[in-house]
Image 1 (cartoon, rainbow, N blue to C red):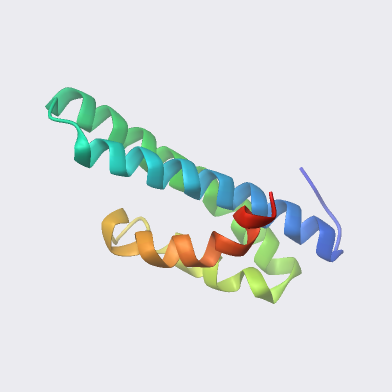
Image 2 (cartoon, rainbow, N blue to C red):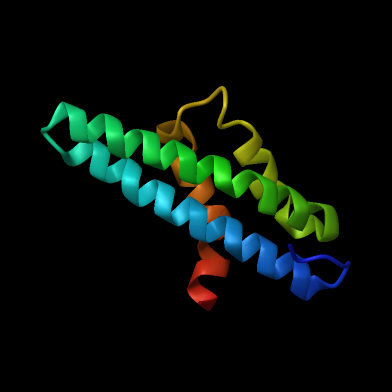
Length: 101
C-alpha cells in the first residue's frame, strides 16, 4: 500500500483507481454488446468487481488530495446506482489520469 501525504502518493492511488475504472467500463460495454446471456452476466460481474476494487485507492487518494474527491464520491455510489448511470462521470473524472499514462 502507498502511504504518505505527498501528491505523488495520491496521484498513484488515484491512477490505480482509474485503471480499475477503465477496466470496468470496458467490461461493462462488452457485457452490453454480447448476445450470449451467460457471457454478459460474467462480464457484468467482472465489471462490478473492478469498480469495487477502485473504491479503496480512490478514497485513499481523496484523503490525501482533494482533487480525487469527485472520483471517490462517484465510486461510493456504485453500490446503489448502476454503472450505466455513472459511466460518463467516471470516465470524465479519470480522463486526465489515463491520458498521462
